[in-house]
Amino acid sequence: MIEQIELKKLILDLELQLLNPHIRKEPAEIDKFLAEEFFEFGSLGTVWYKEDSVGGQGLSVRDMTLSDFEIYSLAEGVVLATYHVKDKTRKQNTLRSSIWKLIDGRWQMYFHQGTLTES
Image (cartoon, rainbow, N blue to C red; front, side, top):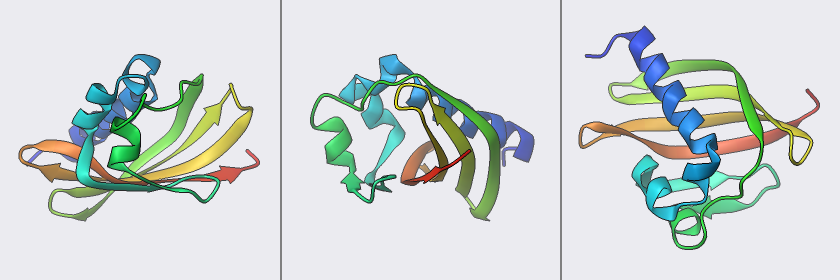
């Protein structure tokens, strides 16, 4: 079993990769990160599914920074990640949460939610 500190670094790295403009604009790259059953509750109330992210032109590219990252174990092979994102492009801040599952030996995002916040 992976140590908690190592797991936190691994999940943080995966979240940071998903903010990377190169990854965000390549549907084939995004596909590697998302579980087949992936869904998201967007910050404006839209529900997104994996095919929405990998079936088109990818995700919108923005200048974003991540802070206050934490993980919480929910079950064996399942973690909740929480953090803040400052979106400099849209001049917005969001609280974000993701559920990551260990599927076939690799961590994949199963669920994601963004909630607009003042700071």
